[in-house]
Length: 301
Image 1 (cartoon, rainbow, N blue to C red):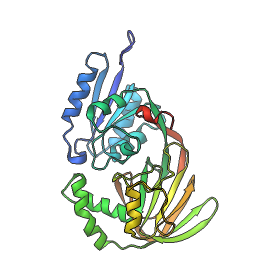
Image 2: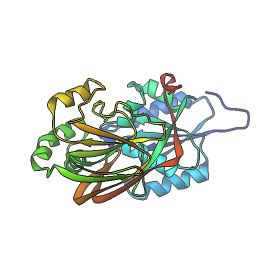
Image 3: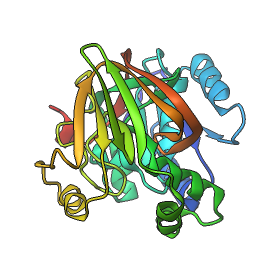
């Protein structure tokens, strides 16, 4: 990476210090070492849980960085994308959350050195932005039992994947599923019972389960997924990335906009962030995109 004469570039690094229960200092030191002799300045902002969206938006507007790097989980990446919508500033990702589902869908490498190399690179994917009740989502949001699990995880004292695992059985026992969902699209209105209704822009959850085989992050279409019941064999198929899922297990509806309602409040999450209970979600694809630095392997996707 080199700088033009008289042209000092700046990287705005957004760090979530508590995501994934991971110490971020090694990552910061590694990034500083890589850009040390390039003339690029590094400005670090640590999220605080209050007014972060507004602060990041203001910094992006005032500082006009060459690149923004989000170091955190899916919620941090989503917040940075929302704050910088319309600024056309490329974003790099250093996945350091509990699930890192977006990084998984973007084939971001596992080693820190490779992650930084991709984050500073010049291969990009312009991914869709989904508006859900006036909030931005990037890859996977849902109503139902998964949102319940995220709520219980956030209320617990254990972080990381182990924290999710600890909450799985209590969530299954206490859940009020099945839920009733009415989905109104541009072409039809249907009512279905299910344990979970997902708004999917990507293929996989952070567990690696391939629940949306036809999903593409940049095709301008999302899929509404209705999981009708627990089926162990079908769940194993998702973990093995098998595309042929039973219609009795899941219904997939490709849309650009839709309204989903339920007669009773249902737990709701956006990109791994719990948002409370909802009886109505209005969802649509936005014309704006988020430009994300990705590995060369995704160049033609």
